[in-house]
Image (cartoon, rainbow, N blue to C red; front, side):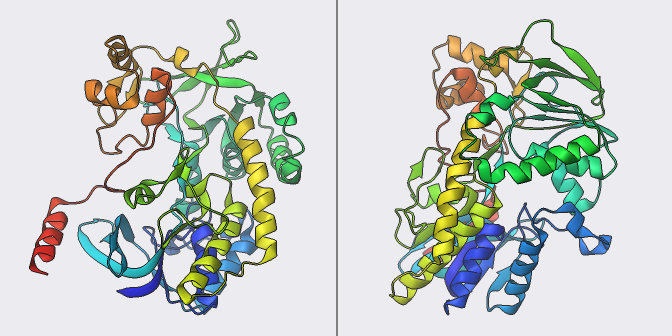
Amino acid sequence: MRTELAVIGAGPAGLAASLAAAARGIRVVLVDAATETGGQFYRQPAAGLAAARPEALHHRWRTWERLRDGLAASSVHVLTEHHVWCVERTSGGFTVHTLLGPQQEEPAEVHARAVLLATGGYEHVLPFPGWTLPGVVTAGGAQAMLKGGLVVPGRRAVVAGTGPLLLPVATGLAAAGVDVAAFVESTGPGRLARHGRALAGKLPEGAGYAARLLRHRVPVLARHTVVRAHGDDRLTGVTVAALDADGRVRPGTERRLPCDTLAVGHGMLAHTDLAEGLGCGLDGLAVAVDAEQRTDVPGVWAAGESTGVGGAALALAEGHIAGCSAAAHLRGTAPDPASAALKARRALRSSAAALDAAYMPPAHWPEQLTDDTVVCRCEEVTAGAVREALDLGAGDERTVKLLTRAGMGWCQGRMCAVAVAGLAGCPPSPSRRPFARPVPLGVLARQHTQEELS
C-alpha cells in the first residue's frame, strides 16, 4: 500500500495527527496493532461483550466520541491488527514493515513519503520480593482488563506504586465492585505541594479522584511502599511500610494487608524502538522533537508519550501540531497549527514535568531486594546474580547483560532494564533494539530474497 503519510499508533496522538493531516488534503494511513482504534487510553470493550455503558470506564469520553466520529467521516485509511516491527528509510521515503493479526506471522508493508510516530509508552514496574506471584499485575494491566474485557483481576486489591495512573485504576476497580484494601502511594503530599503552581490545572481532576476514593472508603497510605508480596501458588497478601524523607523504609512500620490482587506501577516510559531504528535522536529516554514535533530525521515526526510522558491531553495537542506540520511539509507550505494547540502544549508540558518530578520511585528501592528476588523474568536472573556481576566489575546495563543474560529474553529488557540500571547505580540507557518486536525468521528470509530479486 502507498500513501503520503503513515501514522503509527492509533491512540490520542495518532488520531489527532491523522485527522489534522487528512483535513489538509493529505492521504493518511493509520496503523495500529490493536483490533480497534483508541490506544490504551481509549481502549474499548470487544463488540461481543455488548457493553451497555462503556463511557463509565473512561475519562474524557466526549473527546473520544469526537475523535471516533471524526475518523469515521474522514479519508484516513485505518489498518488495525498491523504490528509494526521496523520502519525503513528508502529512496522514495519510508517502508513500514508490519506483521498481520494475532499470530503475527504474515508480513505487510506500507510505503509512505513521511512517517509520524505516535507509539505511546509502556509501564515502568520495579521488582520487589514476590512480584512474580500470580495475582500481581501492573496498574495498567488491571485497567486494561476492566476497559477491554469488562473483568476485574480479583475480589480484594491493593493498588500501589507511584504516579497519576494509580488514581483512575483504584477508583475504576472500586466502582466495579472490587474491595480496594489500600491505595499505597510512595510520594507524600508535601512533594506534590512543592509543585503546586505547575499542577494547579490538575487540581480539579485530582480532587475528583480523591472524592471517589473517599466515597468508596479506600484507605490512602501516602509515603508508603510495598516491600513484599506473600503467597505460594498465588498472591495472598502484601506487606507495606512507611518511608522516611530519604525514601528508606522506616523500621517498625510494616503491616500486612490480605488481598488476592496487587496492581502496581511506577509511572510510564516512552516507546522509542521505531524511532531509534530510524536513527532519531533522543532527549533522555524519549524521542527528541522540535517545536513542530519533527525529529532530527527528515520526513519523521513524533508525538505523544514517545516524546515524553504527559497524558492524553498533551498527546492530543502534540498530535495535532505534528499532523499540521507534516501536511505542510508534504505540500510545501508553511505549517498552520492552531494557536490553541500550541498554548495547550506549553501548559501541559509544564504540568507533565512537574508530575514527573513529584512522582519519583523511592530512591533506595534496591535495598529492599533480597538476593533471590527475580529481576529479569524472561531469563530468571535474580538480584543476587546482578550483584555478583557488579562485584566482578560490571558498572552498566550492557555489562550486566553480558554476564547474566538480564535483558536477553522475549521482552528484550523492556521490563527489567531500568531495574538493572538501578541496581548498578547508573542511569538507564537507550535500548538500541534493531526490531520493535520479535519477527519470524521466515519473514526476514522472504524479505532478503525479495531484495535480491529486485
